Length: 444
Image 1 (tube, rainbow, N blue to C red):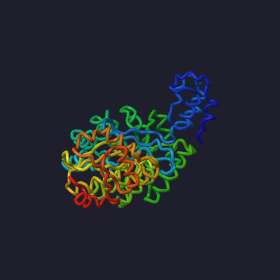
Image 2: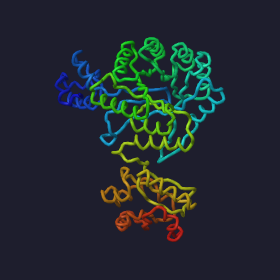
Image 3: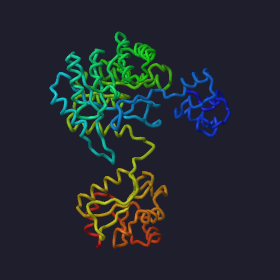
Image 4: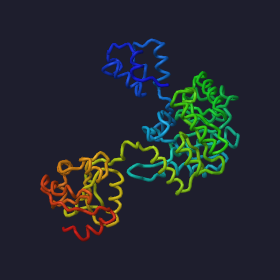
């Protein structure tokens, strides 16, 4: 089990030397307890204390980075079984699978799609993560050429799937410096796979059917010098995957089985239930999900689900406060004030765009709270509105001094007028009615 801050503090030298970057040893102990500091930052710990603290304060699931550059992604370093207990930190990477038996144009088409395809939802740019290339041809040369085809088109994280160390070596000649994930080491070939992974500095998938075999394989691979591991549970069914992945997460976060403290790999193409497999993988702790290229509808559903699950439930999704333009507003355009809760922003923006009336949106900082909640909590008030009008230079953008506020902010209308000197118009409570309101109530 993880040590508490006071237990950790007892093992520290208590010098308060600040050399770790923290003002006191107790502060450092609290960070260690939360998995937010490294024991190596303390220069005065003896080897015994380092061993004890290292085993109990490092994240229960190792952080593994796949790929390099802008499109690289990290998985692991999770601390809870249920999202509402705290949050999930690292969304699973979802990669489209191709076979080296496909013609280059087909491989290039999938690569181009992953490289270019995205859609924006509540201010976030949602994309798939990379390409998984499977050595179904059993030819090292064909495998290498397929990897070369992908590499020529895009800098995407890769999963290289082959049971042949020779085929992987040939493929890594084209991408070895870009940290692809190698799949997979088993209890029969782990020495050769570890040698390849270690030579190129790549993370490695380990594969076994039983948890005790996975734990032993993890020990064997770390002994060979490969620390960045991802576990393939080889489930016989979706039900089997749920059972195994949940058990691994429980064992890892309680530190009952530290050798299982690694991210999980899941091939959603197996079993003929790909869409269901992706959903199960996202919900039940898969960190790397490999799938055949998805239809547009399934693609959006998968990316939306991942975004929803991996949004911190304690931190509302927020927009940056500021003055936003809808269309090309002129000096006589209406100014509509609302809060910086993303759902409120994008809902209102959508309805405003449909009216085809150019206007300004003044977004004030309510720390991501909705209008009704912000009013009730005192986060939305006349002072905030006044300061926002000044800060974002609204007066210089328009020739009038009229401000439309949300219907749920109606109780603040008089106070906003007194604090700002602007005329306040109370808009509808339902954003769907904003078009009718502007057509009937807005006076130029």
